[in-house]
Image (cartoon, rainbow, N blue to C red):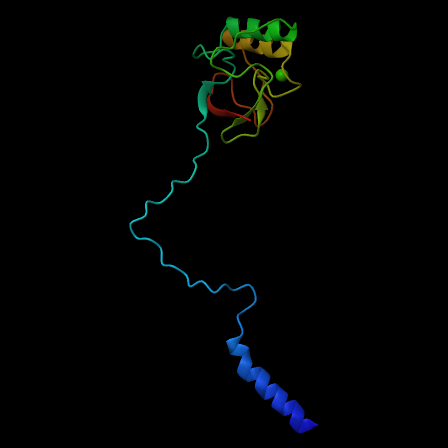
Length: 145
Ligand SMILES: [Ca+2]
């Protein structure tokens, strides 16, 4: 009996290298074509450089027109934000967390307080921003989510 097991083991060990590996194909690998042009990887969409609180992308600095747009948005009236995202759109701000476009102070969404802060900034008065929120008029790069 021991001799029979030894014979079976010997046959199994002899035949093992002859069996194809699990999942292996019979195809031999083809070398990479050295003349092939590499496929370019897809680049992320380019961001848009804007001035924070410039609601309609008219150019820095933010001004009372941006405040008016903010109030119109709050009242449910149409707003023309030009090449900027629509007010209330979530945007990724480079080197900052996602923010809502038009939520100037990064607090409580787009409200009349944001319009007031734009007017204060325009008048040269102090404006308080939430931690991690861009400063008024700061140049930022945004990408619409
Ligand atoms: Ca706000």
